[in-house]
Length: 146
Image (cartoon, rainbow, N blue to C red; front, side, top):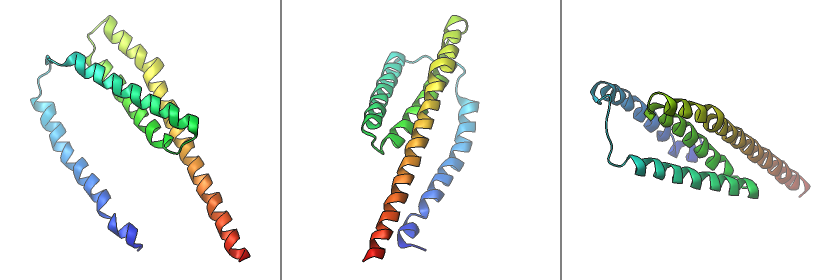
């Protein structure tokens, strides 16, 4: 096994352990958290989250404009944030009109936006693989000429 791969063998195990440890914690929260809670920082939470989302979307725009491979990571993060935004908008909205607005925003904006981010990330990754493959082929041709 390659030395670099051997050094990173622990990474999947750590993530597996973290996921496994979160299962009982999620069950604990499901049983112990109150059904309703008031927050002193509700506005700060949402404004802070939206500012973070704005920053990430601006970075996606910048990386896409420059055709920078980092678009893969930033688009992935943006997609995850958009899904998270939809989830919390829906689950924290009051019944009636606020819930309808949250559902519409999720269905028409946030989820489609997350899908676009996923497609962008996938295409960016495919382009990176294509470039690496072509670079490897050119390098092999150059070695053969020598």
